[in-house]
Figure 1 (spheres, rainbow, N blue to C red):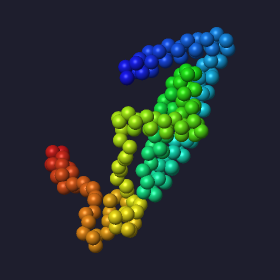
Figure 2 (figure 1 turned 180 degrees about the horizontal axis):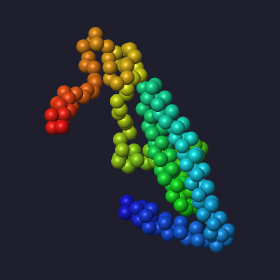
Figure 3 (figure 1 turned 135 degrees about the vertical axis):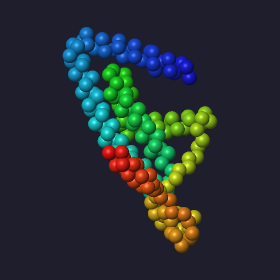
Figure 4 (figure 1 turned 90 degrees about the horizontal axis):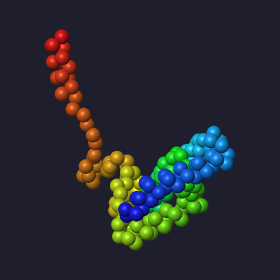
Length: 177
């Protein structure tokens, strides 16, 4: 674990700086700066586009009552890709681009999930609280926010705010004036 962190935080920045200097010697400093800025803008655009698609896929899986494990892992890769693409450097841009493109992101996400499950650090099953959708135990649709049919005697979850304390505070403020 320490070796991986050392590579990420010590070796990778040094390699990035060396590559940036080499490229700037060949094409010029301002051109190198322009390339880094352009890749950051294009990367942010593609990550946003792919992220919206990944979010729709997660919502679709949840609405179908399925666990969106693959979609969540791809979403995590997109988050990492966004950070990598905005970070100045060519190596991080290449890795970020690989995480952004669907053709390479899916196998990378599958490999990461498979290796995490095989290492025993993550269990292979997931659980989540589904809001809305279909209640398979009752065989009927479920309302959002945990509401259920009151005929079954189930509890209705709600939030409330105590307004009496704020009224008492305003009355005491008026007395002071």
